[in-house]
Amino acid sequence: MKISAIIVAAGSGKRFGGKKQFEVIEGKSIIELTAEKILTCGRIREIVLVLPDEDVARFRRSCTKKLHIISGGATRQHSVYNGLKTLSADTDIVLVHDGVRPLVNRRIIADTIEGAIKFGAVVAGVRVKDTVKAVSPSGAVESTPDRNSLYLAQTPQAFRYSLIMDAYEKAFEDDYYSTDDSALVERLGARVKIVPGDYKNIKITTKEDIALTNKFFCDENDVWPRKGKNRKNMNDMKIGFGYDIHKFVKGKPLYLGGVKIPFSMGLLAHSDGDVLLHAVCDSMLGATGLGDIGKHFPTKDKKYKNISSLKLLETVDGLIRESGYETINIDTMIVAKEPKIAPYIEQMQAAISKVLKTKNISIKATTNEGIGDIGKGKAICAHAVCALKRFAQPVKQR
Ligand code: ZN
Image (cartoon, rainbow, N blue to C red):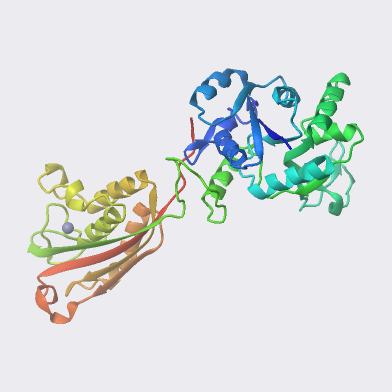
């Protein structure tokens, strides 16, 4: 049994404002993600990828996979037909799939193949959840079809090769056009069966769909084995720890957690001496393996003299975001005899939240019970633990 597939992605994306099949999600174009899903299904022997004519040469060069890349036609129907004509004559079953449905899964692909072997023609589909209204051009509701008999057609759709070829030839003969392959088969009077699709198997049509697809790819429940250097574990979390201590000194304002606190002394440091923010920065740098605060902001460098440590935190936040992480939680402990920290905790949380864009900032304080230099009020130290989470790569046009 020879099973082949056609991935159709020849659209010009006029409504979308660009060719959406080439938008990048997770470091790969949508069409690559879709093709990967079809390629990793062992049963499919021959895959034809139909692209806009002007992109064929470029894609052939960059594509290392065993895809047969051809040019599309004026309409989707012409494009699929080009694909059908390209397939070897000994093809038994052909699966047709939209290039902009990268969230298709193995189960749907396997079910449509099985379905086509058994019934000759199948469509992946999902039940309609909302009530459907038939509406006249003037906007008046004409009828409310029974929802129980309604399905939304997706792809893949799979057919016996001879059947789908007949359907296409007849359609062109009759000058009949449709964007749905199974509709052409239905015209022949052949039976088409529904196999369960998946609500996640969306067709990327709008910018919102791209954001949603990005989200689904990050979803831990949507695990698809991905190989190569672009492979990423989107559920990756990192924990970091930071510690800092500064001595009290006269004639300097006291800053803690980005807040200026009225007190008779400040903390001795090259910067503003914000021991809490330094501990937080160190925990974030540590979590991402980027070293420590001294490496990024050397005390020798004049530009950091008396600098607000909120600026340093901002820079550190930028560094961890560049490496693909964002802060989801910070827990800290300030150890100080004086001043009283509690009245300023909310302000400190707000200042840190604003930079790190998370509300999960915990600040606690203790006095060290009179023990040691900290207990006697000669210095303040701070401990911080952070949790970072990998976030989706920003979507950008390749
Ligand atoms: Zn410090």
